[in-house]
Image 1 (cartoon, rainbow, N blue to C red):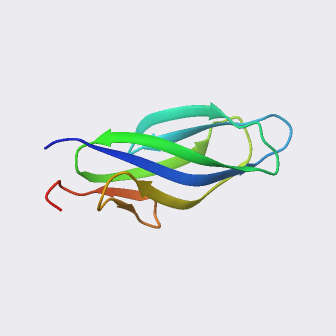
Image 2 (image 1 turned 180 degrees about the vertical axis):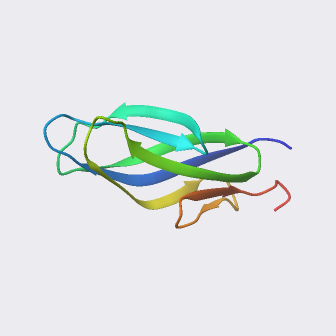
Length: 99
């Protein structure tokens, strides 16, 4: 099967105190990115360029220990790939090209 290019966007917010936390993004169980959150009282629009074969992929954001904070991901959406979508459980579904 051929790979498909998908852009996933989501609004991400982290509430934290003391030291800015690092957070990671996983696609299935594979580390996609690790970043440091430096903003207070702000959210960011996260953009994940994914190039993958058709299938289902679980997206996960998490704070890296020992950092403390509350991460919230809202408004997940797909761009650039007709038919692909994200469920409420942050499950990306990329259809076959015939769809």
